[in-house]
Amino acid sequence: MKPRIRTLLACIGLLIYLCLYAFLAASLGAQLARAPALAQLGFFAVAGLAWALPLRPLFGWLSRGARPTNPPKPIP
Image 1 (cartoon, rainbow, N blue to C red):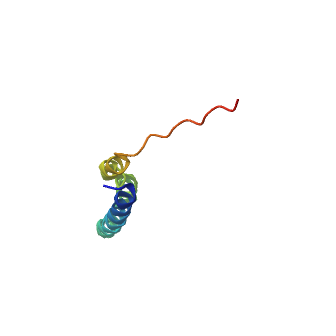
Image 2 (tube, rainbow, N blue to C red):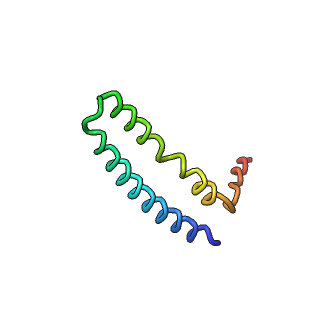
Image 3 (tube, one colour):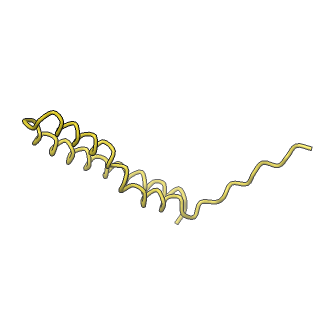
């Protein structure tokens, strides 16, 4: 698959995932409106960091097949 198409698909997938994750986290967070402040803090701390964990396979797929960069040639 060409790198441009792979990048486009990854961007679309990332946008869809982030929209769904934000909706889900906000919905669950609204359920904690009457919970103690420490419970709310814990939930939002975890939810604020956990969104990145499932993206590792996406970025691995995105970088697969990328051409290695050649180091610059020294100036004589």
